[in-house]
Image (cartoon, rainbow, N blue to C red):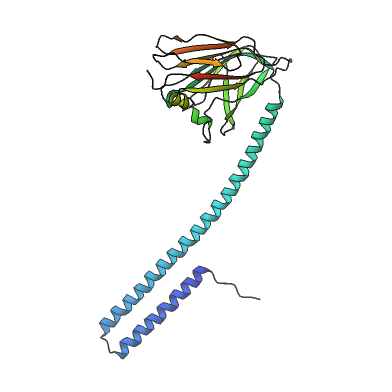
Length: 300
């Protein structure tokens, strides 16, 4: 039978004890041979003993510190592995929700009014989407993609755009991020479910969305209407309207839908002096809309 391997603490204690005995023995022998006075010899022995004791305490603290660091590293590694497994499982749920949402045809029709505010700076860019949804027969949830900047590779999270939902009458909307990449996707859960025509809206602030427009004087906005209704119509929208609001300027801005879809109003000033251009399509048909925007560079 093999003897039990001594622990690091036992090894440290024995090593320190052996060193102390050797040092004390050497000091005693040297004191006798050199005929050093007793008081000095006692002082030397006491100093040697205290030095050995201090060495033992320091080594003990160092060993305990090393052991604690190793324990923390092991715990961190285990926690990291657990977190990675949880994230992988969470992502599986998100992917499943997206696949289900992509396969479902909307059981509703709705009108949509979008207010696109071109701010004077990055912080004042703002989007408001107002909807009136008519369930056919029930709406419990849906997904949407907010309009966010795509001119760089940074990730866009739901908190980055101050995403807010509003349901004025008897109900709440819970917004959960499904995909937080360059193209943000949000899952909206309605509580209680919609069973009658319901008004609701979302607001968010995509900072820097219109920075290219402010810097170079032109930009574009793309909207994909790819939600064929379960009844067979090419779009869930029964009316689609977008109001473009531009900062005050001596020169009016311009907005054109590239394919000529819908009708566009002339730029007019609102009571605040800002320019407004209203576009609307009374008969949406599952189209891809592209609006070209221009405005004077350099502000008013």
